Structure formats: structure tokens, C-alpha cells
Length: 328
Figure (cartoon, helix red, strand yellow):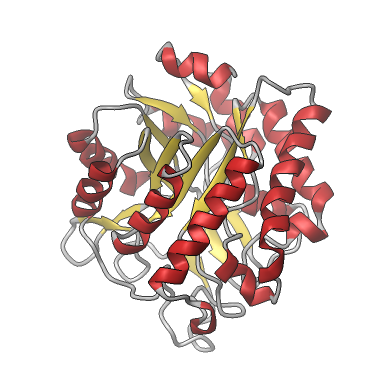
């Protein structure tokens, strides 16, 4: 795999962009389980999104498994198809590689996250589908092992925001023996300017578009909605393990402090893949906030020798990444 050579040679590795936002843009099915349903109902769109990122020059594509843990699929009444969703997503990524003649060149990452099924048209975890911590742990182990058995090259953990849920996911990934890349999200707290795990309540700039007159409940990523110092999260997780650490699904302006904290506690390779969108909860549409040149130039301000893996999250298209890759 090309990414392994680049990692060993301290060269830059390019990860794909916002799979979920691109699937939505091309008309894939979105649901309280984010883009998970598209693997079954819109497979051609999922393949097309992967192909676009491959053709842009990405070294790694990420299977559409961000929201496919058993408790998330329960919101679709399809929890008994968990294995099929996971393996099917990896097969679609593999199909895209074959279509682009990039087998054994471009790697496949399996995505794992602490995402919880959402209430309809709201960005709030649906309490009907929040498992116990024990069940959550079992579900993560199931997903991680299934992805390993499906042949992914890497497990990439996405949108880690806290300690309790994050360490369950990290331990589940580590027990597979696969390389584990840990992606965390953060923001600058509007309350005291500290760097905290990403939190809708704390972030200075609202990243969601929704009708506050209709939806009274404050959006939140996790059921507890705790505001946790980012440094405490990093200290805990790096003591557990992992091969790569980095910032993802975070605004550019909030990323500076988060990256610095990681560097203070982690000497290994790092990754950076920001988000550039406002998310409309009623349409599941990601509205990009910067064009291709602006994205590429902003990324260049962050990249240094330690940050080896660069990509994009929600709102980042293949065209954004193509423009970035052209600069290397």
C-alpha cells in the first residue's frame, strides 16, 4: 500500500473528504442514522463518491461505516442487518477501487464513531436508541471485528468528543490489532476560551441550521452533553494507545488550539481533516463555507512535519481535495 510507504518516509498522505455530505449531495438516502442507509438503498451513489475521491488523488478512502453500529441501525429497525451494513460498505469501497484500477494502491479505512441515532430532523440523540455502556461497548467490538474481517487496512475513529464513550471505542478498535487512527473534534469554548471537546452549547459559531421556534431542544452530539477540557481527553486516550492522533470535523479557527494540545502530549504521526460546512438538519444538506482554493490555502497554514495525513470532513468534496493535492 502506498500509504504505508509514505508513512514510513514521513511523506504526506491524503485521506478522502466528507463521505456523508457528498452522498447527500448526490441524492443518497439520509436518515436518523446519517448516511448508513445509503449503503443498502443507494449503493451506486456511495461507489461514485469513493471513485471521485480516488480520482482526486486520495491515498485512502473511508468505508461508509461512520453510523453503522448496532444501536444506530436500531433506529431504522435494521439492527439485525448490522453485519451486512458493515461488510456491504467495505465491498462498495473495494468496488470503487476496482473500477478505478487502484486495487493494492489506495487503502480502505473502516470508520468507527460515537455517533448516536438522531431524532427526526433534529441533531439530538434519540433516547429510544441509547444503549447501556456495556451494550455500547459490545456493539463497538462487533463493528470493529467485522471491519477487520471485511479486510479494511486501518480503523479510523471519528468525532471523539469525550472520555467515557471515546475510550470504549478506542479499546474496541485496539483489540483488533489493526492500525488505529484517532480523530478528535474540538472547539473554543464561548464561556472561557478554553479548548474543549466539540459541543454545540460551547462552540462560538453555530454550525447547525434549524428552526429554533420548532425545535426547542439544544442540539447535542452525545446524550450527556458534558463540556470536557480537550487536554483531559487527549491525556486519557493517548495513555490507552493508538497509532495516529489528529483533529477532524472541526472548524479551521478552532483547530489551532486542539492541534497544539495533541502535540504537547503526542510525539507520533498526526492527521488533520477539518469540516467546512453549515449543516441543515431539515434537509441533511452540507453547505460549504469556503471554495477549493480557500480550503487548500487554509490547510497549508496548519500542515507541518508531524501532520502527515490530510483530508477533509463534512462539506469537503473531491474538488477541494484535488486542489489541495495539487499543491504538493
